[in-house]
Length: 191
Ligand code: ZN
Image (cartoon, rainbow, N blue to C red; front, side, top):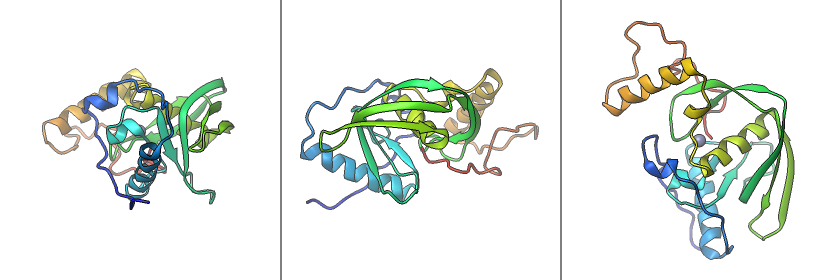
């Protein structure tokens, strides 16, 4: 087996993050190696979830490890259903480092997909695990968390990200920002 290696994580502004991905058709050695390398990249970040587009690969797959002791999990061709309730969580993204926002999404979801052995997976998830699933499936649809912000949050995010694109620091000259979060680290920013 080839040694694991790490990718560099694609950042906000990279067009690969805005494209919808294609189903994994064959679970071959390439896919298994990719899964290993994504897990390594996720741990190195460090993060708790990573989707294939974040390493530049247009496949419907993601890896996660919520740190509950059961180790890393790879999900291929995930589908979400059964969204219920609402849950607010301070959500960040490895592709938008250092920023997070309180985002409301469904509290519970049902995820189906297949694992690396081709077995069907069916998971009822709530709260944090449900959030990981929704965030990663968004990545596979070319959706970034800035699109899940409310109007005020989105304006603020665009301002910060535009400033970053110009190579300027994130500083808020008016001291009015409650959203820039270098001084308010997310509990889990790595998704
Ligand atoms: Zn993300």
